[in-house]
Amino acid sequence: MAATARPYGGLADLRAMQNLTQRLWPCHWHIGDLAWQRTQHLDRDWPIVLWEAGGETVAWAWQHPPGHLDFLTADPDLVDEILEWFASTATAERLTVGIADDRPHLRAALERHGYAPADECVHHYLSRSLADLPDLPATPGYTIGPSTDSAKRVACHRAVWHPSRVTEESYRNVSSTWPFRPELDWVAVAPDGTYAAYCLIWLDDHNRVGELEPVGTHPDHRRRGLARAVCLGALHALKDLGAETAVVFPVDSPPGHPGAMTLYRDLGFTEYGRGMIYARSTG
Image 1 (cartoon, rainbow, N blue to C red):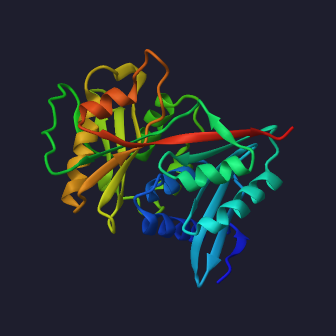
Image 2 (tube, rainbow, N blue to C red):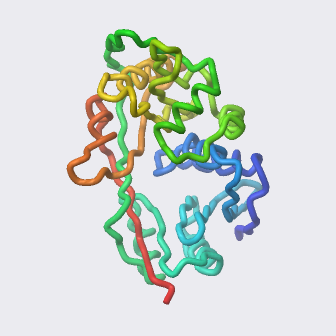
Image 3 (cartoon, one colour):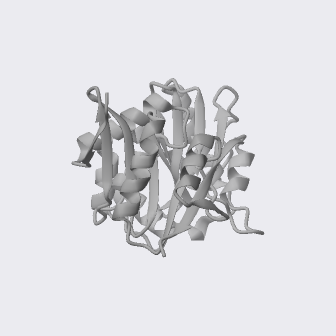
């Protein structure tokens, strides 16, 4: 049955995109990625198209203007159509597409359309079993547990990722979007009551895998083991909900600045794949 394309129409379509992602797991997207990326900003409206066949979503394509594409498809025959849609709607002089490194048929399709590998923005796909989690470390002066104050949670996020468009209103959108669970949104509370670090995990209960996204420590509270503590607290809570595996997809750090990779390796995560960027000029 031929697939038909239609534009994204709201949160019901986000759920359809997540359902496809869930069916195709393991892949380079997680249902938490989609929830976080689509709802963390109120003022963003990306061109997104869904392809449907037989009453279900079989592919989606998400353009990040002016010229980046992310997509997922259950039907390899749709890749050419997806790339043609992207080329017809993107406005940048240089187009980029993100894929996983274990998809040779996607690499071949991209090369047919004039793309070549670009040495930039590599994602590392990391995972760890939840079977042997270490205990939470001591964090003198700080209290570790689930967030209970959205304003403090947003303030911490904005300090970590300054400048950030995340607001209290947009975070309410995040926390009302499936599969958000408040018991998986962990924070470190500083002696003055402010939030010093956080880790949010999204649970795919069908595949029993949770994704850490996002994780951060306030600049005034770094190098005190707080990121490790909130991650472990959230990972234990994830295990208590029946998950078996955790994943996280950090971006490559600049040389000499290991950043997040050091944290996740210390937490026992190991790499099982990488993301690649393919690029082409439109000139």
